[in-house]
Amino acid sequence: MYLSSWLSHLCGALSRPIGRTTQPLWISLSRNLVLSSQRKIPEFSSFVARTNTCGELRSSHLGQEVTLCGWIQYRRQNIFIVLRDCHGLVQVVIPQDESAASVKKILCEAPLESVVRISGAVISRPPGQENPKMPTGEIEIKVKTAELLNSCKKLPFEIKDFVKKTEALRLQYRYLDLRSTQMQYNLRLRSQMVMKMREYLCNLHGFVDVETPTLFKRTPGGAKEFLVPCRKPGKFYSLPQSPQQFKQLLMVGGLDRYFQVARCYRDEGSRPDRQPEFTQIDIEMSFVDQTGIQNLIEGLLQYSWPSDRDPVEIPFPSMTFAEALATYGTDKPDARFGMKIIDVSDVFRNTKSEFLQDALSKPQGTVKAICVRKGAKYLKRKDIESIRKCATDHFNQEVLPVFLKANSNWNLPVAKFIVEEHRLELTRMMEIQEEDLVLLTAGEHEKACFLLGKLRLQCADLLEGRGVALRDPTRFSFLWVVDFPLFLPKEGNPRELESAHHPFTAPHPSDSHLLYTAPEKVRSQHYDLVLNGSEIGGGSIRIHDAELQRYILSTLLKV
Image (spheres, rainbow, N blue to C red):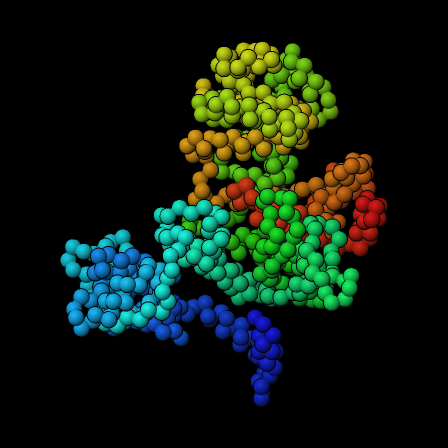
């Protein structure tokens, strides 16, 4: 599946025996790592010039003298300020007496978002002035001293969650956007999940975290790579797409359980769903099968899943590539909503429509349909025309909208061939309701499925734009897609084959005999993990038979 040099010296020193030690020190180190996960809540104020964070103070701290550092979030009538740090908010009382005039001057004149350090006592808020919406709403700080650490100039936007900012403005002022609650949460959540993943892999299952080089030579195949020039004229390094070759070296070298939080680089600027650089949890194992890998990944996600979310239920459902294509029109289906593809070829065997009859007369010819719930109610004529234009422009195929009411078909030429008998049979097969819309297409099986899969997502976007709830953003629908084809027809020369993923993917054990008679029908041991319609992981079992590898490369792929 997919700290600096002194750290290496430190680890090297720890691995050396000292005196009469009878066991390697790395065993003691691993025990300490296990114990570290059982320690108390982290000390967020250790080693710094504060005693507490703004978000941690409660009524149990009453009477304590504290020192806080943070940003001025609000100021009210020069009586209160709300101080913010990355852990929360706390209300600070500005002293009004003459003896504290210097403190008042600092806190009243400092612009919002200025950084200050204050010291004072934790006191209860007056009765009736508690704020139940704030975790620190029962207390406030009575200031004794204040220091302006950094004065803030006028900002391009306020650092408040309810203030709307454009994406371009957020990126331009990234250092300000990072102060938002959501960005702080995202970064800390990622850190916590990665730490839990390390704990699961290293402490519980004996994996070894190995850092691999970033500057390497070009890897044939796959995505385009970024090049890094060096001092030798005409010579370049290549940034790795993934640590593929390095982890194979580790397996051959006997390190049978490897992982890495790996940085990967791919020059795929033409693909809107890809990034030039990204991080992946890279895993490799020896002596394992596909089921073992899937069980490992499910356990990893369940163990590292955030505690404030509903727990992950395992095992994840599994679907073959053929099933995913036939049902959802894609190899990465979003299973949170229906609108599944239905084969309605039998309904139109005797139709008079040349469009449908011509498709059914060809090999692999079929008629497919999806039912868009409440589509007749929410989709407008311009939406239907946009859907039909998308089908024509991108797939060179016709799409026919069919309504339960015969007079709703907007006089399309082919609509007259959808007789009452067809409507009744479609209604029965697809459980169509009065306000539903059926999108019908005909053609070769794979092409028709890909088209309806695209239109399924387009219709979901349109319906959600009209206020129809389809895809629950709080639901995480994991799904394994397995049994991908091992080979695909080569683009530009369909009579030749190319690897669907890479030439080292092992064939499905049940299909090995087909390699010599019908290689285009062979399934692979490749697997993808899909979440809410996005591929978030994938891998494959490698070929371990040298003769088989030579046959695939030389005879089938003609490499």
